[in-house]
Length: 239
Length: 384
Image: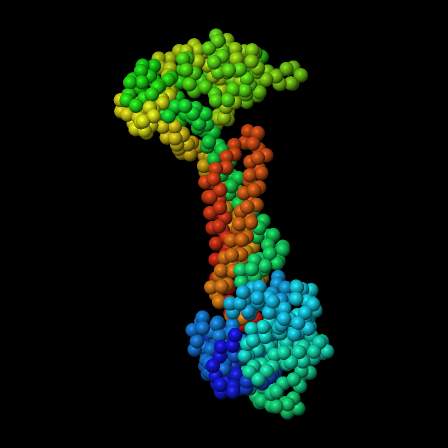
């Protein structure tokens, strides 16, 4: 499934990334020249106050939002320079998503939800669902493969979302507030599980969070404020 | 992805039912109203349809439709018989005459006078009696609908006694005895139909210089009826039409000179617009509600082309179900009114037409939804 070039050791390299929302009258500069590097095999957390540009930055990194200035390389590939179809294909193969509100498709079972990235990548539905069921058992959801999202608790839904994010074995996973809708204990378990199943030497995780209780899981933490990276630290104590 | 599209469609039951209801309503209106219209139009030429034997109808050139009788001279019959390609030609009288019933009431009847020798043009289905019984003196055959309703006798108790074989009525002060009951197609004017022989019809009808309403012609097997009709026209100065041409002439008259097409057209148009609005709006809302889900798929790498196909499939699937239910309901309606006076005819062309209409609604609904999805920024997935 993995089809990436880049052996620089960096999963993400952003230099001077500027993102502006709105037109002349209502311009909002969400990113003001962001410099950030995420190494392969690293779990990077992006923290900072609301509206500082964290979500905009991971949207740019994930290739689902174009930026105005600067460059953002993902495994040494500039997604913005890619043609529309190529970018979509690249994203389908190499990037996994975990969302704050899970964003599971409510009409599909847990296994069918996890199978979606595989199906998008051309795997036959039956095979995709079988593989999805295996992945669900890795996240402790073997007994709930046929459950609909509404039949699952928040923690269970997030585990399904994590299974979906890793199903197609992407090299970069971006997570937006993965624990904010969960209680402390469940959030902790989800992070333990995320780190255990998602992290390996070839993959990088970028997690946006407000939740200081999960900072301990980060390899490095980048603190953002007002559209730029304020500092990058190795431990929560340094923040 | 198509499986996913269908699951997304039916997953939200209330929205799905809303879409289906809208499309079912549109399909029903688009089939039921035109079916009544087609049924009504078919009644205008049902008398021509019932007369299966002649290929050609010859008449005065000024005749505009089947009930617009402008008699020609009897001698025209012999001229037609002399035209090359004519196998046989027989006279037919058709006129509206007042019948005096046994209770003294008057009822206008459609009197048909058949060729005395051959009785060509008689009813195809005899429920009681025989067509040949028309050769008995003063005899007539009446249609069952007329016999049971407008020609029936009402007793002082209010009970209605149908006109039966042996019963009688007066046509132009001449006694007519019922010798048979026939089944005929309902006509546009819905007058009772009274069959008799041509010569007897001449005695029933008020005397005029010209009495021959139509000349029924059969073309020889090796001749093309259209060419024979043209030849009759050239040789006699009469208007001669094949059966289908005469039906078309009749329908054209009603379409042009009555408000029927406008009235039904409005109902169908209204049904189409309301159906399109309801289905389009519901489908659009359905897509809007699922925008985040489409955004998730887009973020995960689903292409616009894939999403386009998914939405089209959803629209077509909903359209097919709605169309099936609508047509089914219209068919059920037609079945339930089959014995009533309501005209209802459901040809395959109508199914194709309404099917196209429903598909048009679906494509329209899909297009306005697709535009929204195509422009969708996948970054929507990170918004709370």
